[in-house]
Image (cartoon, rainbow over all chains, first blue to last red; front, side, top):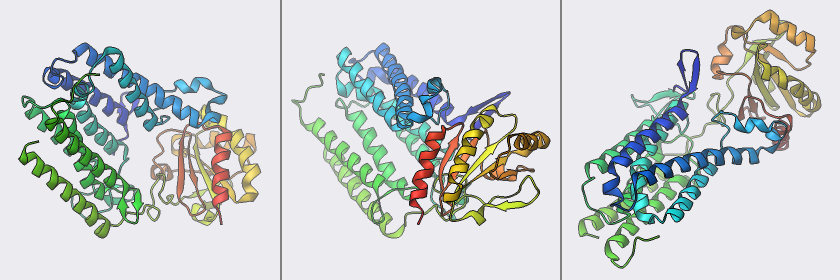
Length: 250
Length: 181
């Protein structure tokens, strides 16, 4: 675990830095694959604008949502809303705001949904890997106790390095889609394959997490949710492949 | 969908369902409340430090109470800014099963300055001195102020990095006091 990186006089939280690197790398890969993924229905300029808008709106939304949840903490010091502290963020709200920004941008620029999702797939795949690595840096999403030789000492026990398992799976999915970049798919199929593969990985690795929530009894909520996402993704791959009358327009 | 992809899809669903069932049967949900770590949901690591008058105080002796551990330094302006609020909270809640431990990170501070600051401000809550930095390391203190709010079972319920408003802190403490048996 290395939550802080010290560079000279600077002490930088590592998790946000890793995420920023992931966004940059993911965008580079998404740009390179754009002619194949979006199949001419989205330009590089639109991709970069979309990513920038989503990130900015997501960050602002995450901070505003956090402030709205803790009004008394900011009531006497509104300026602290601009604080660069990364922990004062509501991540779920930030993701929702970012998704809303993407939908609005798509609507205004008349970009079809499936080519858009295919174009974003490399970025999403890289984000999955870097989120897992940022968790490894911060000690979040830690694993369950284990006696295995590759366990890591974290939070008072020897634990599965589940963050590294998930990062490796995400990178394998990204490399797999890179190697198959020339393969022709129906619109949306790249994105759906990514979703199915990522969900399958989550079903598997959730068993090794140290802070799983139960749905009922000993059944893990995240495993069930991932199973549903995987099943739906596979179903829609089937639908996209067989329903030739489905258009790809906004 | 080609037959091969269809077969793979069915296989993936069956494997996933089987894994979910096996996990539920053979891999119990891990509990963190019996492991010591400086993280929300875990048992608070033991603290055994000297007070200003030389006596020592142990965190485990306070089991059954709501405890706020606040790490501070005499050179830290936000730490000093929140002290009056902490004193106010301590005064109001100390008879309701709440206590505050203000731990000075003495290995990164000046002991004389820290003691002088405490004496001048006449704080009534326990002030402890982490002379060798061991407790700071146990609690992963990398910046001050940082506070750990611990429930009556010794479980860390919140890690508060930086300043928190008095109102927000009172709300947290009220909630935990209501949960006490």
